[in-house]
Each structure stands twice: as structure tokens, then as C-alpha cells.
Image 1: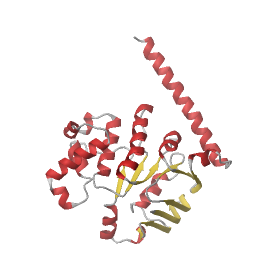
Image 2: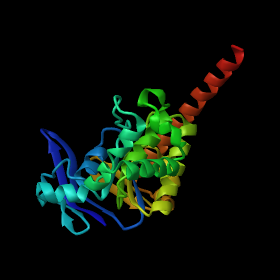
Image 3: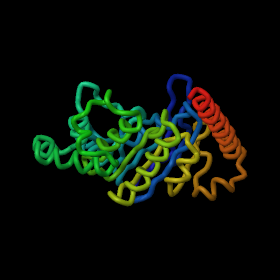
Length: 264
């Protein structure tokens, strides 16, 4: 279980989190929605101990993350997989070595036979063929790089998966692929997940509950039905803005498709 209790964080004069309470129960997926730059990724980094709060408590499995010493924090991180926003793959390493970095047990990491079997299994879980392991990141599409990033995050058999904007920069088709993958992994490997995103449609599809971070506070938490039925002005404003942006993007895609058609 993940808990943030009255967590506050500021960077100089910029208050990013202001008395935030946030909870993720075992086995569920919670999507953290909010406008770009509002502090969603900052909240995520508090969970894994990359950032410490100015005040408040961050608790994972009963451990107070912001009070852990280095070795204790390292042991906790072995139970948490982190999917970075842009994949964060190492260009000089092939896919095998990139995914192998996610194997958190030192003995298993040194066992090449184990690593080959584990990498193959992780590629299967993200719907990639075994031969992909010998490719380099520059040879992969954007959607494939995202999936390799997820494969690395699950290589250490984590209890928790933290996704930082897993569909950012992807077209609608590849976004749907990643959303389906997030949804399937929860059931297949039994992880508890937090997904930071500004994609309302994807969040409603994949998450058990949704939280809206607005002006440094958690403004609303609930199921997709509860969020849609909310009369909170901030919730309505965010949903309506997302709807308008979706229509604009669909119109752009249609214009591009028509343009491509007239060129052939």
C-alpha cells in the first residue's frame, strides 16, 4: 500500500504539492490526472524517494520513505518498477542490456542464462518478439521504446509499477497499445500501479480509481463514473478542456489523412 499524508513540496517560490493526501491500495491501478507542469511527476518521485517532502509522510508497505537510510531505500526500490516518461533507454546498449538493468537482484543479474530467460519473458509480456533484444534503441519506433521501458521496469518482478506519462508523444493507435498493456499487466503479474498522465481517455480505460491534482492539491478522487459525475468546477474545467483538445487533435489527424490522400 502507498500512502502520502499531508505532503508538501515547494521549489523556491513555486508550491508544487500543498498538503496532499493520496492512497493506492494493494492490487489497484490509480491514475493521477492533471494539467502539464502541475506536479504529477514530482508526486511520483516522492514515492520512490527521489525527492523528499518539505513536510508530511510518504509510506510504502509501512515504511516511511523519507526517513529511510540509503541501504533501506535501496531495498525498497527493488520492489518498485519505474517507467520513465521518454523510456530513458541507454543508446549505447542493446535492448537486452537495457532490460537486464531492471534485474535488481545482484546474483540474478550476473547469471546470463537467467537474464536471457527473464528478458525474453519480459518482451513477451509487452508483446515484443525475442529478436528485438539484439536491436538498439535507435532502431525502434517510439511505441516500441515505450514497451522496452516497461519491460525493464518489470524485469525485477516488482510489487509496484510507477508510470510517468507512458503514452506521451505517441499517436492514438500506439497510445491504445500502451493502455491495453498497462491494463493487462495488472492482472497478469499482479502489480499495484500508479500512472501519471494527462490522457483522460486512457486513464478512464485503465484505472480502478482516478485522482485529479489541481493547484498543488488532490482536488478529487474516485472511479471514472464518480469523476464524470462530479460537479466540482476544477474537475469540470479539466474534463471539458481535455474534450476540446481531443476534438482538435482528431480534426488535425483527419486533415493530415485527407492531405495524404490527395497526394497519391
